[in-house]
Length: 295
Image (cartoon, rainbow, N blue to C red; front, side):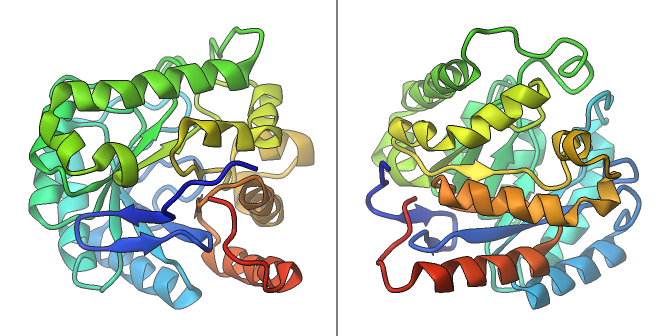
């Protein structure tokens, strides 16, 4: 399996060692997310959830104020800022890397001003102005996710291609190649080499079969030269094969996270942090002293 060297993900405040897989805990400050919408929709509840995720073993917190579930309508900028900023201001004091899930350059600017470590962009910096913001904050970590179409249309007309893995690879490579073209500073500060992580975008404009093809052949994405983040938690594809509702998908979500790690994922983004951490501990014990995991 290909490996990424060195296995360090550099972010605003932290150099994250990827020799062992990391667990990113999901903090949805939303009333309408597909799985936990409304559970942490105000700043106080969201902050308590951050604290619980850290007790459960999360390595990274990922805060989002806008649902990207299939069919979700865009959220006004002011609403997203009102949801996210109070939680971000508290989270950056908790001593762990903080990621914000957003595609809006104005939100990126605001949270990076607050000291956020990572921007997790479902649009892969395709929103006008996003590249320019990242160029001004060239020390931040960055996740570029693959999405076909947009949340309103992605599952009504999913990808139509002969080989979804090859197409996702080609699209992600294009997103990567755009980065240094926008700013020599990005390249000089090594964003392209050690601040960038790629996400194949499970459930974002793909069929069930395409999602599982991306899991089965996920290691092929490592040939792009960047670590991979996998986001399988409670996704609808797991519901299709198990018949379970989103809040019942903990076991299949943990299974998918383990399979993703076995296929080279450096970070798994999950709702069920405690159970995922426990499963990874068993996986690591079974591997024994083999040296660093592939990343």
